[in-house]
Structure formats: C-alpha cells, structure tokens
Length: 464
Image (tube, rainbow, N blue to C red; front, side, top):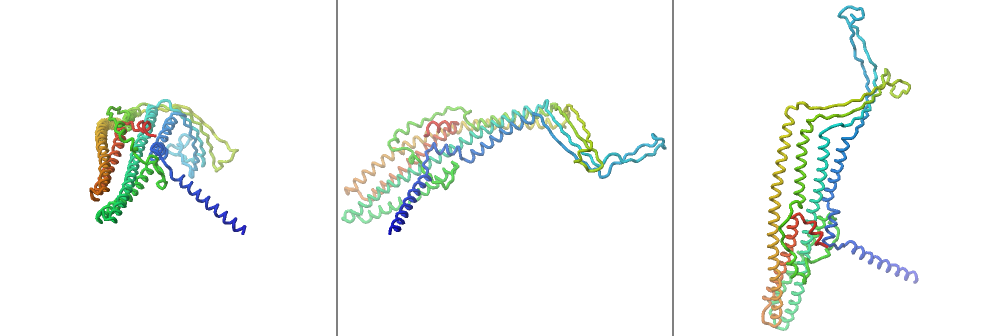
C-alpha cells in the first residue's frame, strides 16, 4: 500500500513538473517585442545586412592586397631538366687543321640540369600603385556606405511591417469589441422576442451580422499570422518562431486626440544625408581614378631585383647526392618598363573612362531630381494622411455616439433592429477607416524621413 501511495505521489509530482516546465517553455518561446527590439534584432540578423557587412570586410582586405603589391616580393623557383638527347654542335674543322667547309659533330652538355632560383623584387616606382591604393580606399568607402544604405532600407521595411501588424491587431481588437456588442444586442433581442416585443426578423438580422463579424475575425486572424511572418522574415528571424508585439495598438484611446500635433511636415533637408546619393559620389571618384590609371600605365615603372641561383649538372639522376658539386651564381639590377606605343589603345581607354564619368554625372543629376521629387511627394502624402486621420477620427467618434443613441432607442422600442445593425456596421466601417488612415499616417511619416535620409535618426529618437 505504501509503495502504491509513493508511486502515485511520484507520478503526480512528475505531472506537475511537466506542466510547469511546459508553461515556462511556452513563455520563453513566445517572445514579446517592441519596435525598437525588432529593429535591433534586424540589424544583427537580417541576411542582406550581413551580406553587406561581409562585402565591406572583403573590401578592407583589398586595401591590404594593394599595399602588399608595393612591398618586397620573394619567389623561389626550381627546374629539373632531363635532356633525353643532347643537342649536336658543329665545329668548323678549318680552325683545327682540317679542310675548309668541313665540320666536326659533337654532343655537348649533360643529361640532367638542376636549377633553383631565389629572386627578390622591390617596386621603386609605379604610378598605378598609388592610384590603386586610393581606389581601394574609395572602394572600402563605397561598401561602408552600402552597409548604411542597406541598414536604412531594412529598418524602414521592419518599421512598416511592424506598424501594419499593429494595425491588424487593432482591427482584431475592434472586431472582438463589436462582437461583444452584437452578442449583447442579440441576447436582448431574443429575450424581447420571447416576450413578444420583437420580431423574428430582428433576431435574424442580428444573427446575420453576428455571423459576418465571426467570419471577419477569422480572416483577420489569418491576416495577422501572415503579417507576423512577414515581419519575422524581414528581421531575419526563423518564421516558425512564436512572437507577439509588445504594443498591440498604434496608440491608446486617450492619446488619439494628441496624435495630430506630433506629425509636423518639415521639407527642408540635406541631400547629403541620403546614403544612396553618397554612394553615387563615391562611384564618381572611382571612375575619375580609373581614368587617371589609364595614363599612369603609360608612365615608366621601375623595379629593383636581386637573384641567386644554385645549379647542378649531372649525367646521372642524383639530385639527392650531397657529395656532388653544385654551382652558384647571383645578380642584382633594375628593370624598367616603358610602353612607348600601344597602337592607340591608351587613347581609346581614356575616352571610355571619360564617358563612364559622364554617365555617373548623369546618374547623380537624375538622383538629385528624383530625391527632391520623393521628398515633395512624401510631404504631400503626410499632409493628406494627417487630414484623413483627423476626418476619420471625428467620424469614428460620431459613429460611436450614433450607435449608443440607437441602442438606447432600440431598448426603448423607438427603433427596430435594422437601424441597430446599420449603426453597428457604420461604426465598424468608421473604426476600420480610422485604423487604416492611422496606419497610412505612420507610414507617411516613415516615408518622408526615409526620403530625407534621416530614417535612422528618427527611429532612434522616437522609438522605444
């Protein structure tokens, strides 16, 4: 009996522990994230940002490579030659007392020739080296600016996805609130019908409205799942991870009237804040250096060298015989390379480089015009979104009042269920319109900050 009791207690303890562990695990796996945390996570885990950082590190190695080409270069080479048949040499016999025009044949040399050569070179002057070093530094700057641009594009996308997800949360919350209102009205109407104070058609109308809102809640739950998956993907998070957003509303009810004072349209901006514009400036400098390099290759280059060789001459293959004699010889000198004539290639390359510079200048001019257009359009969009949000907020407040009055009249028997359903539907539409306009307002603010190149500063200063 004691054994059975202990066994039951042990089993019960294991069950309790399993429940506690399961709840803790679920809590750990279901992470609640604020917008700031989503952005910070994306900066560390987004694949595009990681790739851009790898490219930047790669360009840093390129600078080391260019510097290395200007340092001493040491090369060891070796040759093992087997003269399977020695070359024949003809000696004029007239110099050795023979008849004029006659020759003596002789095979000269040895069958095996081993040569090992150690050579060190040092660049003395090469115009392309210094230009290449400048180009490598500008290339590193290009990839650094690309990292900044990629980060800005990513955090903008994450912020937009976050606000869209919050908007879906808000719509789901409003639908659930409306569902409770309809359930209450439906319950009251059924009671009135049972007491003969309402018609069956009134009950049916409310049932139809109730079923419609249940369907809408199912659809909004599906939309919420898709929106969360998109946010996780942009953050670089496993889409199978379970997360919740810390702020499940765009703003609380008491903050709504204060909202419209926070969105001021400031169109003044510095185009140099745009990372993509600065990238074009760097590309222009790289193209200028490319043109300089065309002519630098036409300037003489000078290299110092020193060479030491060790040679073994054998009639038998005895490379590893330490007793055999080896012969050494060495030399030092300067090498100069001066391309005197290239068949017009240099002029053709210079013309191509010059045209590339002009193309980049056109890109810059086009970018300046496009950025100005983006800022103007974003400012107009923000103004419109702000006005729409104000109108929809007022309309939503009015729809709430209409519904409250209609519910009161319905309870007093002054109006029927048709007006009640219509008022509830109008409120739902007004709430949806306000939520959508609020989302448009937040995104419009992000758009203008992104257009001005200040999206990172804006999110750092305004997002917690």
